Each structure stands twice: as structure tokens, then as C-alpha cells.
Amino acid sequence: MSDIVTLQDVYKIYGKVHALHNINISIASGEWVAVMGPSGSGKTTMMNIIGCMDTPTKGSVQVDGTETHKLNGAALTKLRREKIGLVFQQFHLVPHLTAVENVMLAQYYHSMPDEKEALQALERVGLAQRAEHLPKQLSGGEQQRVCIARALINYPSIILADEPTGNLDKVNERIVIDIFNQLHKEGHTIIMVTHDPKVGQLAQRQIELDHGQLVYSGVV
Amino acid sequence: MLKLRMYLRLLKRAVTKRKSRMIISLLAISLGAAVISALVSVYYDMGVKMRKELRTYGANVVVAPSPKNNFISTRELESVMDTLPKDNLIGYAPYIYGVVRTGDSRLVAAGTDFTQVKKVSPYWHVQGQWPDSDNSILVGIAAARQLGVETGDSIVIMAEENKQWLKAEVTGVVETGGTEDNQIIMSLNKAQHLFDKKGKINISYASIIGDAETVERWTNDLESDLRVEPVKKISQAEGKILERIRSLVYLVVIIILGSTLLCVTTTAMAMIMERRQEIALKKALGADNKSIIYEFLGESTILGLLGGAAGWAIGFGLAQGIGLSVFNSLVSFRWQVIPAVLATAVIMSCVACLIPINKALSVEPAVTLKGE
Image (tube, rainbow over all chains, first blue to last red; front, side):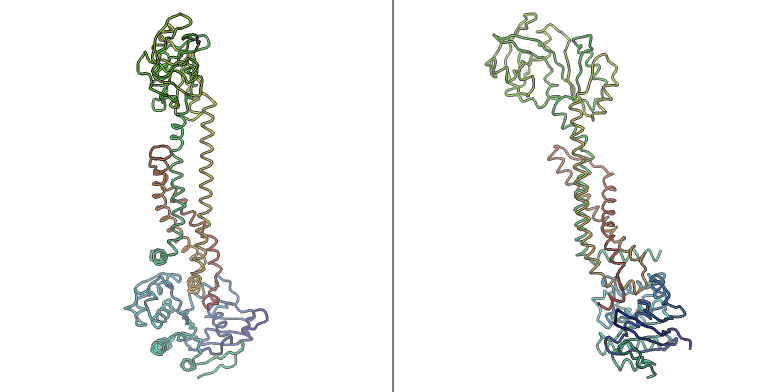
């Protein structure tokens, strides 16, 4: 399979701190990769660079055929809008919008909002009945599922999930992991940051970072 | 269309689901708009009302005989007054003067139309009653002291020139602060008879509503041998007073706009800080700067329209209060004030959001969503 993400000699330096140091990674299309490592190891920085929310200090980054390190802010936003689906640990739903409206928000910035399609996305994550509920009326697991539905709605090339089960209980963790399994089977590329070795083992490949350096990359 | 519908849906949710912050902004805009609405409503009516009010301070036009004559015929005066716009003419008081003797004293006596005097010079302060017949007179306060008369007394007045005399009852003592305080004032008819000047007057004072330029134009346009001239001191003073009040209104409006702007900006700034995560999320989802600007300007426009509408209604009520307490009459409804107030409120609300919007655009999604 062709590579959908390539990081070559990537550095991210804040003053004297090397958040990322000479990172070289390739991720194939349809691959599920778990990014692991202790706090401060550079996982989030790497995810931000892949997710077009940050740029490297040095090195080159390719996302779905586009060299992102050469792009300006507006072009990065456009690429993120079109290629990336984001799932957050803290869900990050707009509090005054209902579940379906939160999903439609991603459609709105991407192209054209379609309520029917947004409802189908919620149905896919088992939340069709909760479409008109506000985030505060949903449990943590339900909020995370809305977040996944929102990430999927624009058919992104890559799904970036930052600790998607980090704030969930066991039951909801299972539901969310099942959804990711299903997405992987359907051919989605998933890059997931996790602290949990059990969740990490579900991926095809684990990448481990420590002090900004790649210390392990291998098949589970 | 679907995009517009979603945009409106986002605005509606932002306004209706975040009531507490919105209410604070709405209150600030409503209060600002209310004061502006009241001032603008009063401002529109103020010219007319102030001119009417200022007319109570005396005549602003003098009608004098042509240089060749000493007298004006009452018919001539009437025909001149008939040419002036009726709605603007408050009244005109004709006067005839003569020297009279009463007892050992020598005084000026004036004959006038008391009904017209009440209109032209409502500031005359009469202790007692206004004369209601040809045999009753007013005596100026200084003249009354000089003659030793008071209300209810009868005096004999003799015209110095023709020695004709009359006996009249003093019904009131008048104080004007002017030359009338030294005079005896009787009906025009009686004075013309006493001085043997039937149908004649020396001068007439008129009170006309209008600014200095308008009054001057009217008097210049008159085709008459009579000298009809505005009392420039009064006309110009009126103009200056109005100009000063208008400047004051402008100043108050600017201060109100400034303080409202400050209040709304502060609230909007706090709102942006509260919504940093939401903004960061929207950016992470792919919202460009234009989308963020449109959303905040949209919310500001709704706030401006709601605040402006509420402010107009409150302001119109306030204007009625001001009208009743200051001018003793209601302020008229002018539809032009509504779009003016709404536009001002919307502009104010949008301008107040410019700095906060700029702040919103600088939100870094990667940093903010991580909670740093």
C-alpha cells in the first residue's frame, strides 16, 4: 500500500527544547498506528504536525501527497478540513449545539451541511436517538461517539485520535474501540495516541516516542 | 442555501443558548440605544418646541411706520400680518403711545390689544386682573408707586396734547422688567380715542416661529412700505441657544456611544476568552478566518438589532418623559428614528467586536485544545 503520511528528518524545537528530534516515519494508507510514550515525549506535537495544526522547525512532512511543511496557515487549514478527521480526549463539542449540529458543523466548514447525512453518521455510532441532545445531556462515551461521527462525516483520508478512550469508563471504552475496529476494517487510516497498552495492542503497528525521539516502531 | 440555513442556525444557537452573556451585552446596547433614541427623538422636535418656548420671551419682529410717516393704520398692519404663514404667527401686539397727566404726574400711556399682548409677551406679570373693558387699565409697577395707586383704585388720565381725559379703574399692576413698568396701559380703542388717533398705531411687535434666517426671509419678502424687521438680537440669540443645545446633544451622543462601545467590547472580550476552546475547535475542524469573522459579526448584528429595537422603544418612552417635563407636550413619532437607532446599534455592536474578533483569530487550535 502507498504511504499516506511521511515524516522525514522532522524536528520541532521550542527554544532549547527539542519536542521532536529527527523523526522519520511512514504510515501506509489504511494502516492503524498507535503512538505511545510517556508524557512530554512529543506524541501530541507529532500529531499536531500530521494534523496540519503545526509545522516542523526542520524536515519534511507529506500528508496524502501534499508537502505540508511548505504550506501557510490558510493552506494548512484547507488541507486539515479536507483530509483529516480529529477525535479528541476531551471530546470538544460545541456546548450550545445539539449532537447532530455538532456533526453538521464539520460539514459546514468543509462543504455543505446535510442533516440527513449527519443523522446517518450518528446512527452509525449508535446515537440516532440522541441527535437533538446538547452535549451536557450526553454521557462521556456518548460525547466521544458524537466526536467520532463528526470526524468521519467528511470522509477524511486520515483519522487522528488523541487519547480517544482516556476519559471513558470500561463499557464506553469498549464501544469506542469497536467503532475504531470497524473503521479500520472499512479501510480508514487511523493514527491514535494512547497511554493504554491494551488499546495500543489493537493497532497494527506501535510507534513509541521518548524525549522527542522515535525509540520503537514495529508490528504488534 | 443549506450553508446559509446552517449559518443562521449557528447564530440562533449562539444567541439563545448563551443567554447570560448575551443579556449583559444586550443590556449595554439597549441602554446606549435608548439614550440615543430619546435624544434623537427630542432633537428632531427640539427645534420646533424650543422656538415655541423661546417665543414666550417676547416678540422677534417689529413693524414700524415708513420713514415718512409717524403712524401705521391698523388696516395696513392687518394686511401685512395676513401675508405671513398663519401657523407660524403666534400673535402681534399693536401699540399707540401718548403723554398723559394724572394728578401732578406726567407719564407715557400706551394703548394695546391685551389679547395679543398675552400671546406675544406672556412673560408680563400682572398682579390683579387683566383689563376686560375699555374703562379698565393696567399700571406699570414703577408708575403705580409714583402715582400711589393700587389695584381697584380709579384714576383720571388726561392726554397732554389734546387735553381729553378719561376716568379708569386700575384692575392690575404689571411688571415686565421693561419700559411698561413706567407706563399706564389701556385698550387700543380707548387710547386711540384719548389721543385722537382713530385707526392708527405707532408700532407693532409680532412673535413668529422660525429660525433667524427664515424670519428674515419672510420679512424681506414682504411688499409693504412699512418697516418690518426681525429683532436680530433675539433671533440670533435663539439660534445660538439652539446651536448650543444641539452641540450638547452631539456631545452626549458621543459620550454614550463611547461608553457603550467600551462596555460591549469588554463583554465581548470576556465572551471570546470563554469561547476560546470553541473557536479553537472550529479552526481545528477547518474554519478559516473569514468564517470566524462572519459568525462573530453575525452574532453582533443580531445583538445590535435586538438591542437597537429594545433601545428605540425605551428611548421613545424616555423622549415622551423629556417632552412632557421640559416642553409640556409629547414628542412626535418619527419613523426615521427607528432605522437610525437600529443602524447605530448594529454599527456600535459590530465595531465593539472588532478587537475581540482579532483576538479570536489569533487562537491557536493545537495549543488551546490541549488546554495549555
